[in-house]
Length: 255
Ligand code: PGA
Image 1: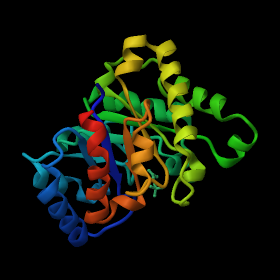
Image 2: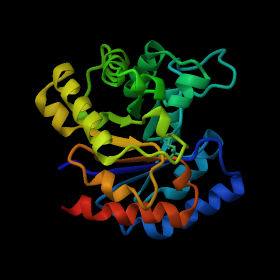
Image 3: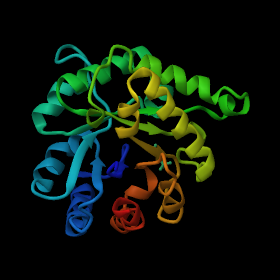
Image 4: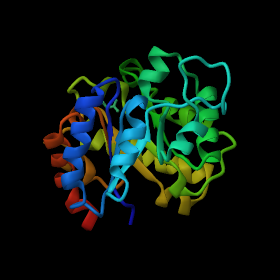
């Protein structure tokens, strides 16, 4: 059985003070959910603190982005090598905001996936179609290209990689995908991974849904057979909301 993974993508939110408070708040309760991989992805200035505070707890820490080069003249960037050195276990790669605001290509994202794997940081590769792409019926071909190009020459164990399906039109809009819409794309992703890798690989890898997930809708999503967790933005920013997400996912971690 695939262990659910509930990840909070803080994006560019929280200060040293409020972020630290949130981590402390989560630490008080997260140990009640040993059957869920609980992950927080704070902004990079908070990573070191998050990692040191959550040592010996059930909370794992991930970054929101990385650069594929180890070091050098890349002002403002942080490398996968640096993340590994900090003790960071995961890194979100190819989030739609990186693709669309910062113009990241599938080829560049592929380099990041490679760098993460080389450093033993688990990449969470995000894929998803825009509203226009959905409306014009190209959802599946867009996702297929993002997977094929994002995973080009990537050879790894299914536990070393996570995929997140995040329809762009659902992110930050309150316009969550229906459980059936999400399940259909998750099943398609699993089928694609079967072709790219093996049936065993595709059955073992975890695929998260992201886009306007909240405590009210998570249960209907995570109960779908191919949805193994959530990548959550807005609803991960307060303790109570994030803990509610874990509560509502608990049953699917046990059954
Ligand atoms: P949202 O963001 O939950 O606020 O829609 C999800 C994400 O961008 O990962």
